[in-house]
Image 1 (cartoon, rainbow, N blue to C red):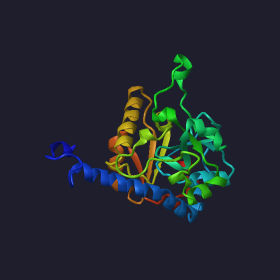
Image 2 (cartoon, rainbow, N blue to C red):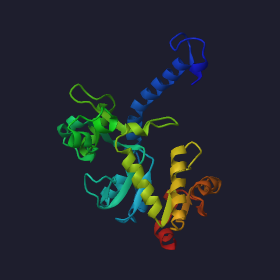
Image 3 (cartoon, rainbow, N blue to C red):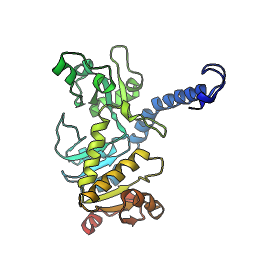
Image 4 (cartoon, helix red, strand yellow):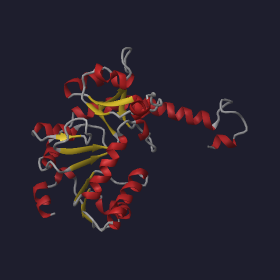
Length: 285
């Protein structure tokens, strides 16, 4: 925007446009390393605190997460608890895990290459342009790409060989995480619309919410606007407010953030999630 006030063209020296391009390039380099960092930290993680929570999850429960790791999935698998990612292309039974910013075990590949991997299909937009009019769909992201889930047995080699970040000569591959920065390009992640829609429905219909490790800061603009909108719709339809538990060592300081968005009272629990007696808490609430 400030380039419009600049007296010289975009490429003429150290202009605002050049600075913006430089920042974008560095963010892209960092995003390529981000998957490696998450994976290395995940391999060192202790699943026991997560298991103490996940063991209480039932088939009609929803986990809404902004994290890229697969720790919650691993904890459920180790306890033989079925789960799904909220898409209708594969099994829809079990706990729903809605990953609004993507996941390190998801990849995007061109539609014509989807059968070359043998991976489960998570999301593919139906091409009504072809079916109804006999013409090819526009070269839009949601038509060109599909979303696949990398099986656990293949994930390690995919990440450590940097096949997700760089792709290879045979296939065109893109990791499906929304990346770094304040403004995440969610529109470039196919399936994101489905995930957010399911998130809205979950908040609209739920009776209880447990918030762990999330501050809902002013930077979370999209979450704040949309979650607030869902709560307004609940009020308009006289659905009532859910029982909201905010679990964090600094919950008292964070509580105003959530009250301003959800518009209802928040129960403050000033503890770390891993320190909670979940059996007692769930029984109480």
